[in-house]
Image (cartoon, rainbow, N blue to C red; front, side, top):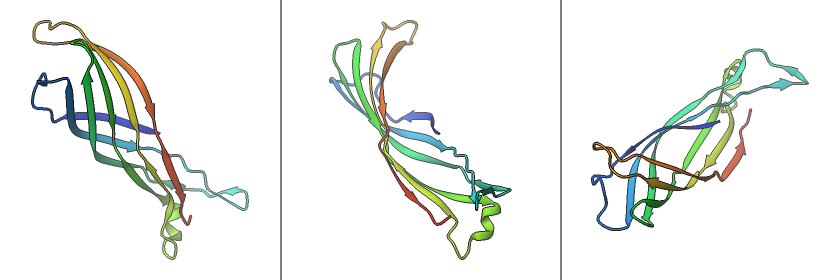
Length: 141
């Protein structure tokens, strides 16, 4: 399960001078996995996998279609090595303890509609589509 918890914008200006915008920020990405390990068809008691959390650079490009509509594209690149835990730690060494490797690069395409300023706040709503191309590799566990 992939979960992006927060993004911090590094954009200094409230409204960019032209229709194009670029924002860079940080994304707190947590990867959660469930591991079921079997040997000869029998579950290994106490075998589990470790969960990773990373702070990654997030980029966003935007284009103001009108004063109220904006189209946005955002994404980042991540790589996680999933390690064995619990009873699986007894196998490393001689093995590395790696269950698998995951590389992914989510791309989000969104559009937002901004309402007029109201008491110093400019509310908006939006929606979009997300595609997550992934590449997986097996480990030695």
